Figure (cartoon, rainbow over the protein chains, first blue to last red):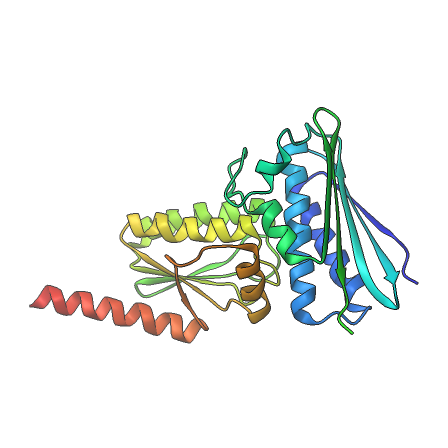
Length: 134
Length: 125
């Protein structure tokens, strides 16, 4: 079984590293090229949220198994400002940064599981899972 | 890594070679804008065949290049969006409707040439 991979997110180059690590890991699980791209794009979005809003953080990747299927779990965490209004942040087109407001709601559409935990002043953790199609 | 920009007649061709960091993307924007003025270019092709991911930042930046160059009188065509990347962009919710796209470099050049020919015909009439 593949070991966990943790990528520290400090600069925009780390965003690229995180999605490339995930691509390598998911290729080993037999992900289709479309699912690889969806996963890599989702990681790019959550990792960029870290550099944009929190400055630094981490993306942790690991292989998960459930009911005979395998997938990649992504946990993007930071100790940044947190998200004051999660309902708004999950709406298409809403942003407090200079983006298009597609990051979080868009990311949710790219993956199978999406969980967001956040506390103002304490940070944000986003957990994603993309399952390999049998 | 900087994106090489080649001048071909009235057109510029920016050929992305590898995954882009945000810094690379911003630099590409600046370089294209500068060269459009310097070479009085009428069209720009941005070839993204090598990109395995076009997330919201890259997509927004490429759209920005298209809008900014249009304000300078040059049309931008994005060529080579891979099928998986196109799929991901639609899922993500990226709106690329106001940006010209073409299948590959050849189609992109043909589009720009046709547009340039039409404009010069209109000028003669």
